[in-house]
Length: 419
Image: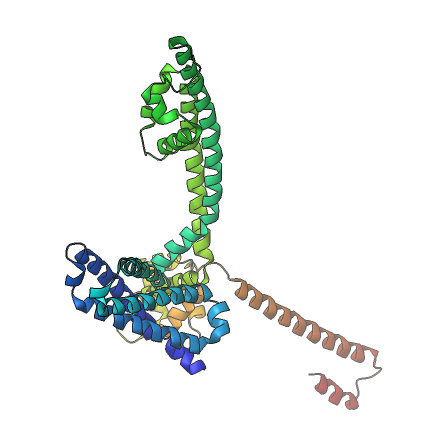
C-alpha cells in the first residue's frame, strides 16, 4: 500500500497530471473560440478525441488515488477538499463525454430538449477549467496568492457588512432629502404631494429610492461613476445633501478603504507565513541560496584549488574584506579570527575544507537558536554536576585525612580508589 501510494503521488505523476490539466484547459478555450465562428458539426473531431483521452486519464488517476488512499482518507483525509473538487470535476467530465458521444451518434434525430441537454453539457465542460487551480499546489507563487485570497474572505465579509451599513445610512438620509425636495416641487406646481411626479430626471436617476441611492454610493466609492456627477443634482436640493456626500467620500475613500487595505495585507502576510508547505519551501530555497553563496566564497578563498584553506588564508580574506563583509551580512562576527577558525575547523586538522566551511557557517549564522541554547544549558548542567561531584569527593577525602591520627600505609588503597 505504501509503495503504491508513493507511485501515485510521485513528482513525475503529479507534474504529468498538472501538465495534462493545463493543456486540456488551453485546448478547451481554443475549441470554444473555433466553435464561435463555425457550425457545431464543423468543429475538428480531434478536439473530441483529445477530450475523451484526457478524461480517461483523469478517471484512471482518480481510481488510482482512491485505491492508494482508501475511501476514508480520500474523503476525510488531509487533502479531502482537493479530492472532492477533483471528483466533482471528473464526474462532470465523464457526463460531458457521454453526452458528446450520444450527440455524435444521434445528431440527425436530436429534438429541442436534447439540444438543450447538449448545451448544458457544453457549459459543464467549461467548468473543467476550475481544476487548473490544482496547479497552485505545485507553484509557490500561485499557492501563496491563493492562500492569501482565501484567508481574507472573513475580513471581506465583515468589510462588506460595514459598507452596507454605511451605504444604507447615507442612502436613507440622501433619499429623504431628495424626496422632500421633490414633494415640495410637486405641491408648488400642481398642488399634489406625489414626490416623483415633477422630480428632475437627474435626481430620479441616482436618488429616486433607498436601493438606488445605495447603488449610487457604491459606484461613487468604487469608481463606477464620478462622485461629482452624482453630487451635482444635489446642489438644487439642499446644501446639507452636498455636505453628506463630501463626508461620505472622506469616510469611505480616505478612511475605510485605507484601513481595510492594511487589514487585508496583514491577514494575507500572516496566512502565507503560517502555511507550512510555503514556509518550508521558502526556507529550503533560502538555505540553498546561502549554501551556494558559501561555496562560491570558499572557492574565492581557496586560490590554490586544494579544497582546503588554512588560518592564514582565512585571515587574509577577512583582512581584505572579501570574506568579512559576507560573514557580517549573515550575522557571523569576524572580530576574533582565531576563534572563528577553530569553530569552523571541526576535525582539528589545522585547515578547513569545503564541507566544514559551509556547515560551520550555516550553524553560526544569525542569532542563537532555541535548540542551541537548550544544548548549551544541558552541557552547562552536566559540567556543574561533574564539578559538584568532584568537589564532594575531594571534601570527603580531605575529611578522612584530617580526622586520621596518622597517615599510614593501609590508607593508600583508599586514596587511590577515590581518584
